[in-house]
Amino acid sequence: MVTKRYPSPAKDIVHVHLAGTAIVALVNNSGKTMLSKIITNKGEINVSGFTDGVYYIKNRVTGEIQNIVVLH
Image 1 (cartoon, rainbow, N blue to C red):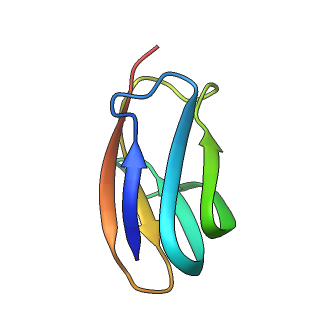
Image 2 (cartoon, helix red, strand yellow):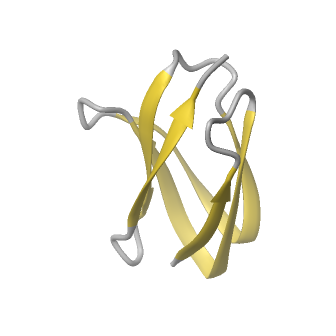
């Protein structure tokens, strides 16, 4: 499960902390997966190349979804 993701709003990097290992996807408002990566315990998602807006961090193992705002 995603236990913590910060900062929000994010400019360049989103930090994700979770218990164990999961495939984490960053999804836009249209439902398109922008990126997907395996994170074990903690990791980073680089959002510097994404346009401003609301995105969703989805844990593909548990199905948990949390939003994140990207503002440059």
